[in-house]
Length: 294
Length: 294
Image (cartoon, rainbow over all chains, first blue to last red):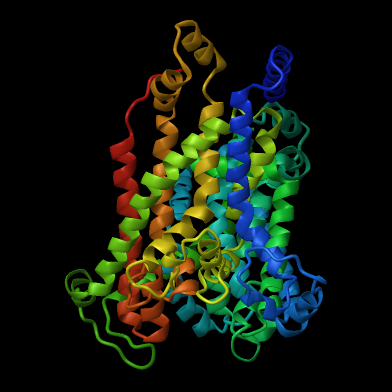
């Protein structure tokens, strides 16, 4: 269906192009859109540009300065002064465990809601979906008190568990939608062969569900990678801080090293941008699926 | 088959992991918030039950709370009246951009996937009175009279914040309307053209009314996102100058963690959740109008 739609579109475009090479309207449209696109992306270009400047050059009056020579040293300073490397490692660890845990738990839930027959199935699912509306910030204080009480502050779990919790509702929703489209006859055959539910789930359903898993994992990756306020609140020891914290690090003695600050910001932004460029369609699909629910 | 699918033990093990995480990370903390919201707890030591005192104070006497609500409302209204029309307009234009469509779509969306910390710090630099991009641009186009301290002026600061949240959130609104447009069947365009509609009539009278369901979704998402907005303010102004940019999430954070008013802070948390839930439900009911099938 999608492929067909795409071909149709290509055909219409081809036909149009044959008819008129490039009208005045199109030129205006393209110019206008190019300007809009440029304006939208300009703050980021400015960020990358300034991340290669000497801190002293920040105070010129020009908008865009060609760095001569590019100060790659800023990125080196980012690693040394901004503590980027250990924080980067923490971010990777926390993000990957959260993403994997969310995917695993969401598959189990989705299977229970789409296939298993039990009384409170619909009610339960609605309660979980309600979780989408709860603001993270409302749980900051109580969770801080709880974590403090049970000694969970300053640990990887202090981030992995709440990240997973807040990603479950939407992930479960997407996987459920996908599982509903899988024909039951496949499982029926497996049941006749004497397979258990667990075997069916992991050997048959899981491989088919992979596209949905990919979608939720990419979206959750970006959510976890970018998360700031919980990481900032629950983990105050250097050992467990995540990457967004390294910007806040630049107060006090390094606060005038603007070049390195901009380099740190670039380093945080780049993985998300790369993820988006590689998985554009998955991310768009994931965000759309979440929003249509409302 | 039926017996296997309603096996209570299996269902339990499918549902338990997800439920456990959600209960311990979201439901129980919110419950705890409600409990402490009725106390005067200061973080350490004993506390007394004060009944509805906290809630009464917040609603009737707390000016910062009402400022926060008004700011959130302003943010919401500005987003819907400014960002959304632009998003609709650009999503219409972009469908005419042929092979540039995908590139433009990606560029317009990129700010939305960048960490809020980077966005906040980046824009704080753009607004910076010493080396900021904005003042430099104004100077270079001869508008140096407009130069100022964008985040330091209490009359303007909230608008500076609104611009940032609009830039960051633009991608989501755009993506929703774009998907809505893609859902309008081609035959409708053809039919309208055959009936002699010009492009303006086509969009104003045929296509935009068909976007209504998507608008409902987009507006609800925007309202929730605006109410939950916090990190931008926390990182850029801390709610200042003089609480002029205060938002609920940030006020809650300051009360709880800077002034250690745990009882009062928890009461704000609870009201925060209630406000978000009520507005979501009301909007859902209010905006749910039947749109003809197409």
